Length: 387
Image 1 (tube, rainbow, N blue to C red):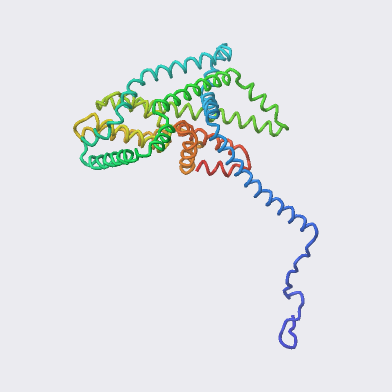
Image 2 (image 1 turned 45 degrees about the vertical axis):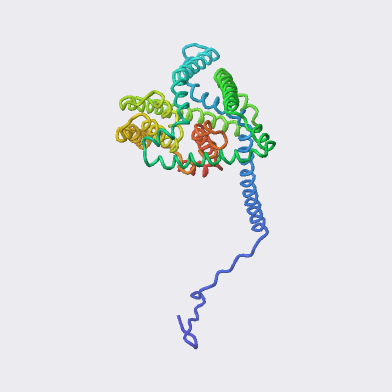
């Protein structure tokens, strides 16, 4: 290789050529336009999904009288369907098996309510005097209790001073229902909801897979039908396993708590065991409420403060063992839920449906997670819910 006049190489093959930018074609412009349209459609779909979700939640809130029995019946159907299928394998027709299962369920529920109604009513009657009794037992509670009494007396005196305006006072009083009327309305509402739930549960158990086949037949294409069947079977399998497992754990936990309360000398130990088992369906909040109630009952029962601290202390230990050791070992990891999602679900469903919403929050969250895991575009949501 020879050098030129100024010592620069003259071999053209060695010179570095700058890459030329390819010319923009109409095909590239069309692809970019299609991608832009796809991104726009995705954003619009997300916003429409959010709006649809808000509308559904608001509708469920307004229609709680109708929605709660339907959701309860669906959950109980998932738990009791394996029992009906087991009876069908021994040549008991599904309608008769469903009637037997609902009858046994109703008998157990009625026996439990009749056994626990009187002790629960007795403790409810003591509620107005709980603050006074606690203030007598604990000196550091007496001062806040006296302040509450003074505030109540001040409000009463304020109402007495306003007797000069009888018409206004009369209007306010007539607008507020009495406690007896409220209890009567809630009891009637609960009774109607319970009857509706049992009727729906019977028909769901008696019909079995026929309802699913009719729903699938209404879907437009084979791919959608196949996906719907897979989701339904996955929901039935996972949810029945989850609800049965959690129910067995909660029943065992309630039995252990009842035995511990009996050993420590607590009154009505069966009542506190049932309460602990039911509240155990509500993560985080259930153990806290149970601990507070057991602590209050112990303080009202035992004269010695050290003795009164034993029942809530034992319950805290049992709750920690159940929540951190037993349940994680038994419940499948694929149904482990994100704590943030659990707390959000508790707040949402508790606001919508009250106590029933608290009890159904986690099962409904599991349903959403399983559904999202089976639908490809929603898998990121399922991954988030699973933590």
